[in-house]
Amino acid sequence: MKKYVFAVFLSFSFGLMAQESKIAISKNQLKVAPFRMIAHNFAIGYERILTPSTNLYLLSQIIYSEESYSYEKGYVQDVGLKVHFVKGKEVMGFSNCLYFMPYVQYGTFDFQNAYKEINKPLNVRSKAKFQSYAGGLLLGWKLILKKRFYSDIYFGGGVRTNSLRPEEQGKLHGINSFWDRKGVVPKGGVEFGFMF
Image (tube, rainbow, N blue to C red):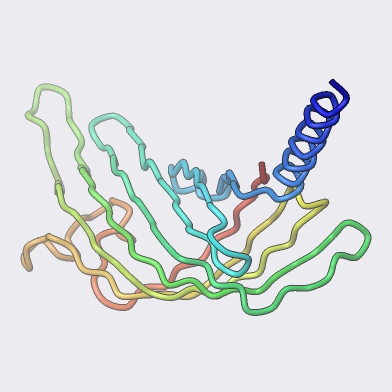
């Protein structure tokens, strides 16, 4: 009987130790990019720690703005692989790391710039539905507080193309023209998140 009690106690102890180690090592991270709201863009992301030096990065963005007969609607998905190359030691609850991240991006958009005068038909200045494809490299710095909360600042750039016809390119008057650009484009951001 003592053997069974000892075995149950030992199993329970190992279970608690495993549970504590799971709590101590947060493998999931949820984030938001609040400053993108200035450009009518809601961004929420997720990171998964794959190894001690690499994270899988996902960021989804919804673009929505509507005013009278003009609107901007879109969805953008970023996928990247963060590779940490410098990790600082924890000091007073803070730690930090530097990383680089190759990324790819896909977006789909529906833009219209139009106005209507009384007793006249709708005047559409420009309208476009298109997709964009991009890829590039970012350099970033993550500041972590108590292994739970963090801020993430990154910058870099990449190359983007889209499905707009040549005659439509650069003619989206009065519409957020950032997304219809082709060629080399800058990319940067500030994100805040927590680990769980």
